[in-house]
Length: 520
Ligand SMILES: *[C@@H]1O[C@H](CO)[C@@H](O)[C@H](O)[C@H]1NC(C)=O
Image 1 (tube, rainbow, N blue to C red):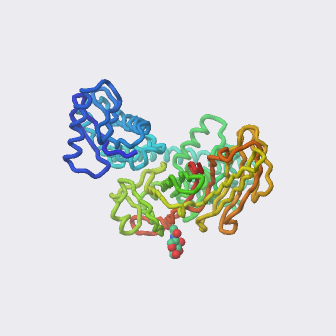
Image 2 (cartoon, rainbow, N blue to C red; image 1 turned 180 degrees about the horizontal axis):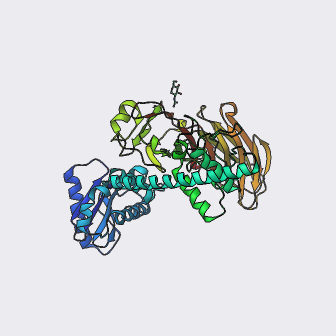
Image 3 (spheres, protein in one colour; image 1 turned 90 degrees about the vertical axis):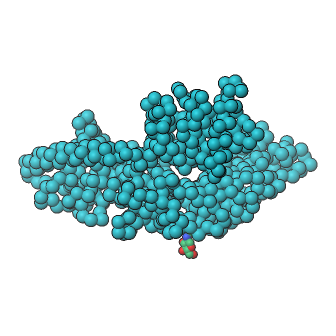
């Protein structure tokens, strides 16, 4: 979809605010907006109207209309979906949806509109993400921060008191038993919550004579658990409600606990890490998704790559940072930074930092900071090509040869699956196959699986006989894969503090995968 502008106007057609997303003259946008009420009054109650050049999609909201102007070539269903997202943003910032309120909140609304577009209206953008970004610029920010700090201070004091008390109790118990237990740190998945909790508290309190146990494992980032062993398994189990809420409080404080006087610099002692258990406090995720459609006789019909770098900061200590991006790609990938990101800094130095360097990035949320898009017309850009060649064998069926070839030798593709449709009830006989295959009768599909394709396994093939079939039966083929090597030659190379440009410890997760890759 090509979004030309988003506007809010009165029922009478007067524009209250309007945000343009493509370059155009003021006269042109004013003309487009002025035409809207005329089109409305001439027609019946629709949700869209079209002129020779553009489409208006709109939604009534009490006394106003949320209005999007798109090109006519854009997909109307997508337009309507996007419209709904824009419309949902308005009550977020305005109590009553009338002219005055809209005008009063014009800047917040425009920021929010920008977020929707910057975060990619086709992806799952939620209101919380939009809100977080807008809040950064809002005048409420200071109030919000002050309240939060007070709350945090209170919580901290409460914890310190409770910690002291628990420590006293523990010491008394230990004395009774005649010896003190070592300070275990078995909080991961431990059901023995009160004990591990005590240990944690001892760590965080200002207790003197604290001797660290040499057996204590220090917290290290782990590779992401592959499936369902999510953070849930690592939660501290709590038995009573009190313990639960106390642990929550502790968690809320997160790394503040660690940065206390007892934590040696550079070490992480707490198992209560932020939301992402296996990530650093500054975590970046580089994600690329690929959509490809290739004709069965060759010819690229569609190639679209979308890249997104999200930043997740879990400690306000690291809120004011810059992310250094290294970009070697020369294939014409279009990069776009978030509207709050300093464009000039990115252009000149490849660094992602906020326009207002004294402001921190939002905390504890995934923030999209950089996007890219690459559309190609040339088959040489494909990561992998598939050549499926069925030929009639004169016995009412087909002999089918399929081969793959890795086109970008720097890539390593994992879990490659080539799904070949079969006519219903067809039992294939596979005569040759690199990798593995399985016939999934229920789905009428022959699945060819290659766990790894890289420069050392650049090409491979499979041959099978399919009785009672015609060459058209084997299309469209669907290909899926994942990869830890990025498609674009872009990576996060460094994270630096704004203040003194010292390096910040961070983790980067890179994923490249297929959304939809088909040979039709
Ligand atoms: C860019 O090129 C340099 C020099 O060849 C190389 O060291 C670096 O890893 C490359 N970076 C990316 C993101 O490909």
